[in-house]
Amino acid sequence: MKYLEFKEALQDFTIFSINEIKKIDSRFHRRRLNNWQDKGYIRKVIKGHYIFSDLVINEDILFEIANKIHRPSYVSFEMALSYYHLIPESTYAITSVSSRRPCTYETTLAAFLYRKLKPALFFGYELVESQGKRFKIASPEKAILDYFYINPHLNSPSDFNSLRIDVSSFEEWISEEKMYYFLNKFSQKKLSKRIHLFWNYLKNA
Image 1: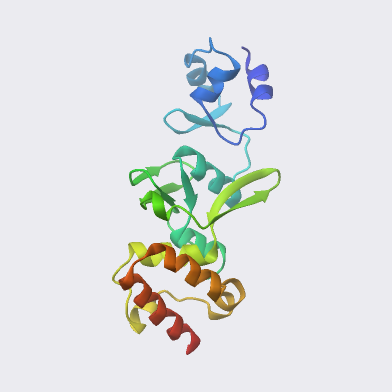
Image 2 (image 1 turned 180 degrees about the vertical axis):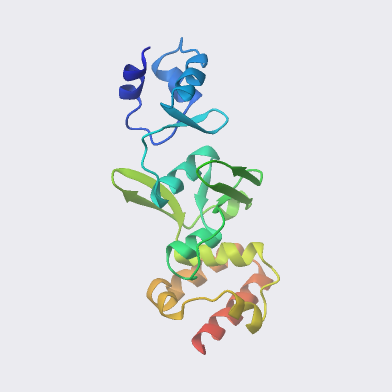
């Protein structure tokens, strides 16, 4: 398969894997990928996953890539909080929830960090469409709960203040009913207590 045929066959893929290439050409030899990398046609993201070099990278593209290089996963934690403007600063990595082992991929595009939650807590994400592409990201409520779940030290007003939560954005994005519905599904008394304290802190902020 020539490069132009290859690109046409995979033009709808933001990121493609060896397995996806094999589906369109079972005899494809990965030696060609090395050759096309040397020529600057494609870029390797992580082992076995590639993008076309002319792909325009933006936040939505990075989220889609994050979903695909470590499955199943969805964007959450600091990255989702920043996406909803609940915290003011950008984050070091594209942070995600996965039901698989935790890991970090340092790539030329970005750092992709995955924290493990047990399968029963793999819920509360939304499928966002952007320019014909789709990515999974935690709802604002679930992003907060995920973040508190992996940071059990957050339990006092000074801890909550350090998060620098934007109160106006919180009031705009967060549904109290949805927050507590998700919280009940965690079935954790300590987490429930900390979220109640956090909620009361924001009401009085």
